[in-house]
Image (cartoon, rainbow, N blue to C red; front, side, top):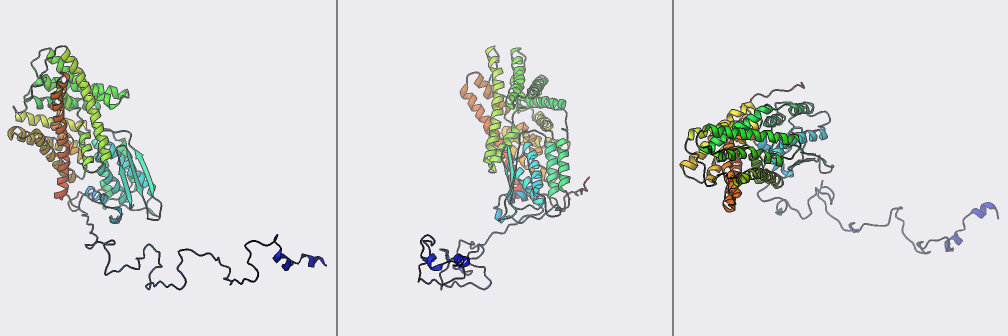
Length: 553
């Protein structure tokens, strides 16, 4: 046999040799039809042969997400697809301020929001999504650190994103964390960025400048590129405070002196000077503690001691002045009214986590004040200080003096908040109106102090919101300082004095009254702002001041 014949496969032997064949080989004599080499396996979801599924002409194949079920009929549509009344039409008033428009869209589901109309000119190839999100977070950080409410911060962040044409953006604001997510489409991965707020400061001039920037970004008549927005934001961060440190200390002293006149009911220069000196000493001690890196709790504790010590010293020296008015005036500069209003506002608008954190911060500050004053009062009582917790302060003897003192208190409070000089006059008038309404209701109409405080604070919120809409700015500079005369300084002091003299029941009653007045202030301010948004249409594109176009310099 030749070598070629030896290499030739012997099919008969290979067919029956168990060492060569597979156990899955087709037995001899079994005919299997050939199918062109395709796989014989079939899907269990395949339509059986012979079953026809009718398809309307031009319809997409069965199984598409956009194809209605075969049982669907347009004439007899079930309620699961579209309600009988149809989908409500979303109507946004373009002449309304951007805060109202953005707040309306934030409260809507993502699928029902109208498509954004790009206000700012987009760069070639579309906006740079990471840079827009970073700019949005930086703007939100300045607003939140400046004391703005969580809902207004989210509205500002949403306005910035929509100004550059970014749809499907979801901002999220908590007490210390800002985050935003942008999903280009349903089939693309979302882009998420976050930023932490570590430092907080009171500078309403910076807050107003950030609002002006967001207002220009939302204005179709003003072109602000990303580079220009970053440049303006850097300038806002670098700007110095409008008032020097010595002016803030002097303003704190004048605030305490005005508050002492407000609660004493008559003009006493000794009380005014004593309260002013105590507040300025407390302010300098607080600055010293801040320079050493102590937390704010201890700063408030130390700042509350000098006014209380001076009031106790005047009582021990048998000087015929109201030591209670001195101590109460010193407390007015320390009561955290700004954080209280922001915390209650966040709670009323549904931001419960942020509201809880703000109110917890207020509680810590209040406990710090209580600790400082109680320490001084306790030692003052032990060494023979005649402090009477039943001696209620008379505030109805000289109404004109009280109105003047309330206006001075609001003016100095505005300086402490680092407000723009153009807003100081307005907030001073707003504070005078608030105290006039409170005094008329409380001492002339004999209405409860809680109701009188709530109505006066409501007018503060209403007028503040009107002024903010007229000037296209934040409402905080027009409301926070104006509520200064309404803060519960006397109720807080008398509660602490009763506790220092072991009269726990009366002390807790006075402190509960102080808490009720504080809540009335916060709820009244928020209610006044909401009333102005609901029933008043203020400001329009035709009456808007001319916008200055930016050209990159």
